Length: 630
Image 1 (cartoon, rainbow, N blue to C red):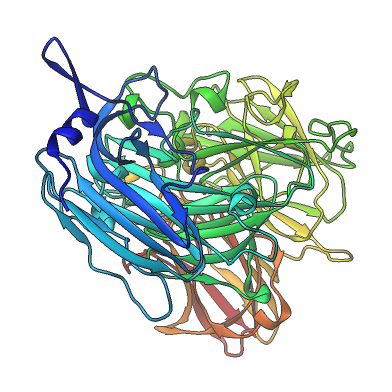
Image 2: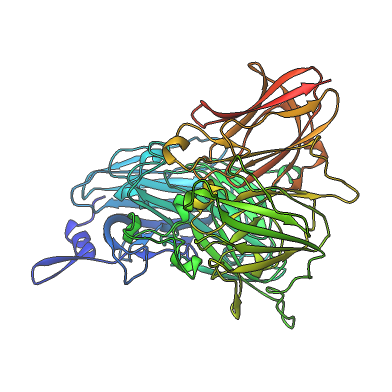
């Protein structure tokens, strides 16, 4: 069936004095399902046409890109949401209203146990096709298209926003006759990127990186509102050409399901990780749940600095210095960031800017290295109580902060450098005001400042659980973190004492030189880190942290010569793993940016072990020697 081409052209374009005007694309918040459902059949009419997209706000610069719409309705990025209950049959038409481009549409096929990924629809300019399929398997999926015949991993250019979510809800419970309750219970977020190329092909130096969530780039992304105690359910879909370690400030979230375009897997209760950071691969879907236990402002964002830094219009590299600011959140952040405001329970007062005075007091000084001043040569110096400041004089890593669970902590961050900064206590459950995003953390009546040169800020928290966490700069992260503004936080359990002989740290960071980072990483602040010593037959806890700026696909491996040895996983992101998962396994493990992993190692043979940091593509980027002695 072919609709009149004249109708399509009228919808796509109007004219003014003979000059074509492209319609404006709307950001789609994925709250309203497309089409019409009658008698178990969804009737849907989609078309792709050109529109003017304004991801940085309606008054900002726009770009003409192809986008999806329902026929007769405005264009949307991401495309119209397909959301039905399991068992619904979809009867759809798809029209290519792009005047010069052939369109390949993927993802419009059945989802059940018997079928696999369907063949894409190929539509010539002006062509329309009909397609029917049944959506039987509950889950989170998506459809996408390209005008350049590229696979999803390489769809980086103007057609990169031709994507839309597909959500299949379980059959409603008795008495529930619509999707209204399901739609109110969760939110759907589609990640997109318009870039020069994909991240794997060119990890550094891309001129354009426009990263969006539901068609907008921070600070124009949607602001979400919840109340303390709410159960928050999100579905996140990565249709971009990059991978993303997605980090939630202040809380753990539970990973309920992962999937892709064709398949979605819901995990058994014991296999649902509780994390603060989780890696989303290209084309992956994620369903998660979390409960806001404290009020205030919080952020959910990608942990790759390139994806959350302020850039020029439409993601282009900006000319001029964006590093000096008074409001980091609004002036220095961009891209893949969602803001969440959590209100106190009704009748309760806000605690966002309150915390118990710290009984354990630290002084954390930000300063320049005397041998190489500049943004690329910053460091942390740490004083515990009245003790003298400790510094890493060789590498680029702050001293570990060691505290006890349940102990109120006060850390006075003093900025002796000429650069504004702030410190985020990554993974720590704390009140919002002390979370570390200048101009954002806190409550509407009191926002935390950026720490200006010669100024200070007192952060307070009481860690509720033992584990391995991170402190790092949350200003100009792509330069300040590799410069040295990174360190580990070790929270000890009741009755535990810190023994560096058996409690070992391996912190993986980026070199300052981005060209060097393409070939290597630092471990414990150096490329040639000093070996660690282990005792034969003695259990050791190895805490591994990835806080690089551009290595989200990193793997870690513990080897003797060329053979991978065994270790026992204990915790992820400071959250202890269930006992049934604390079993010996080969020592080879993914470790994304912003993630911490704890393992137990009990050496049975003398000699050297080697902890390798391995790139996603395979080469070893850095190593740390572990000497086993009797």
